Length: 195
Image (cartoon, rainbow, N blue to C red; front, top):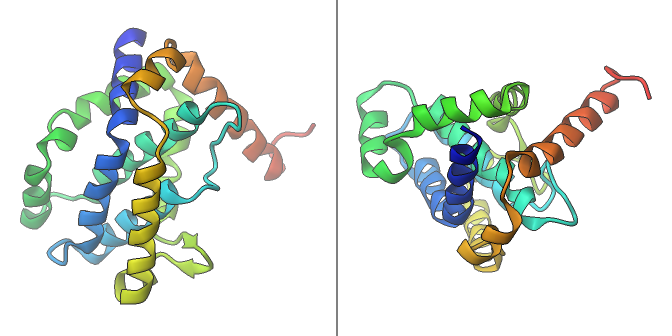
């Protein structure tokens, strides 16, 4: 199971720039309900932001694993069963076809860490990016263009490809250890854990 998880996360990391475009499409799709679009805008801002809540200065590959997971979790949870939402899923079978099973696999390997990441999804629609609520990026053409430009920079500068990832990601613990540290830091900052 761990080797399937590692293979899955590797694939998600390599496809993250493409998947980001899908999140942008969700953000811009006026047929989708407003709350779905706001979550999509939130996850776009999260992915392109250099200051997300899981980062490892020593390992860029690991720093993007949460982005790849959160993007999928956000779209999975935000998209309901409506006709327009189903039509959106059908436009991107590469992301949605096996998503449910893949997220179940992640949960079985990651356990509490997956629950912790899932807990981040509801806050995405209310997140701020560069001092503005992400919902404003849906309504303000100038802000939307700026976010789109940041997305282009992210995709251009993205340091992960098949070659870099083969050397860096061989075990599930590589990804999970960084997330565990961040989860503990977050709990400590909230006062749940005393040093």
